[in-house]
Image (tube, rainbow, N blue to C red; front, side, top):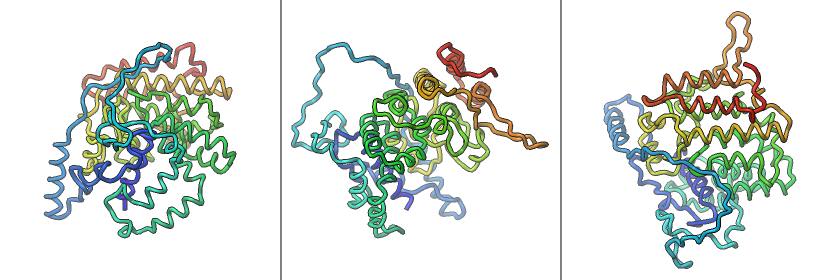
Length: 400
């Protein structure tokens, strides 16, 4: 069941990421389902046969091709310069796009783009073409799921918004926000807030192409959606969006585990969103990450990571500036006035909560980066983030 659900997630992610161009429907063959290095997770080593399978799985993990070492860096600019565009390789409109050759993809006709993304999700569940597992073998009745989903439009819209944020598709997110704003449905708005969209955007932050654009669209897009920033900036774990950015640093550039930053996460083996690299070196649909997890690996190898680099620093700082600007200018609140939910402890004598301010949190994250980071880590990125927090433009940093 979990394998089928992951295949559906892969379909939803891929469809959202490339919505409006390329293949209209991603089938199991296009998603390369069943062609990874392994098809089952790493077994528990409790029998001689399991020991052999585990050793074989670890061997396959060793031969997974790592992503290219250099990271990518996005540059923000206003497209005011006029130029003659270089036409890409032509392809006849009747010819199907090659799913493995992005240069062959063409924009969809307007008639195709009017079909809601949510409908594509339901259609894929009905056809099951995204999977190589028959729905008859599943312990759930898929037709009943489809029926319930059609009746719960607010939850279906929530799923669609979640995929658009995780896949970082700016146009799809904007289109879905229009649907949310025009529906004037309080249930849909409440469902969207429960999604914790700001935390989701910073969890799947990617600095090489989209950088802070998803956060910017959620906060300052032309289609206004009232998130109630004071409430939306803290999730059900008590983590602020600033905490989420700090977790992103540890997730992408250290060997630290989730239990180190929050005792409630001690059972977790990896941070959410590890399948997306903030430096753009791999993504959730990249063959290297899918092959890695198909071997039974629980997290991204530390050997794949590098120091807190320019790409990551730029994305983190841009998000901090956006959050501070929005909280101060739009909602008249103080972004850095909310205490952190990371490294939370209580006094053993009186039970008083010992909670860090954002500046203290930054210092602990810097220490953790130095302790669990790569050999070439120089903490220059952390100093840059500190300067950003102390800059005159960041108005809401309390005295710490």
